[in-house]
Image 1 (tube, rainbow, N blue to C red):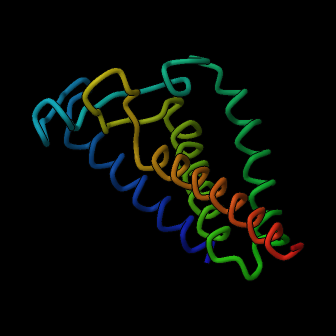
Image 2: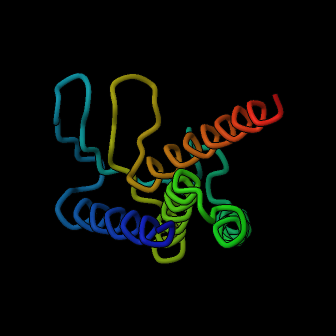
Length: 151
């Protein structure tokens, strides 16, 4: 299940990025919900909030390590735990989605722009964020279950 989730995320991420690159000019902004949500064709050579601009070697190394750890966790820790499988699949798909951009384009295609100072992001970023959130939720659920079982 984790690998299926990852493949779906990678496919959606790469399809949406291809659509943005193909049909939008760099810097073009299309309102979806005025003053709230826009499609905005943007490129990023760093991480969120523009940190580590141009440090592709760093992102390559970190992503390879993260992908290895996630695959290890899927194979060892996620058996019988649906929430953990989904969480790890989301993180894996998100990491690989942005990794593909960095390898092929030397930059990440971002296109979801929300009102305010929030960074422009993409499907891979969303999957990473949701996956980490579900991973933390899983830790809390496991801790609660262990506490209940020791009573």
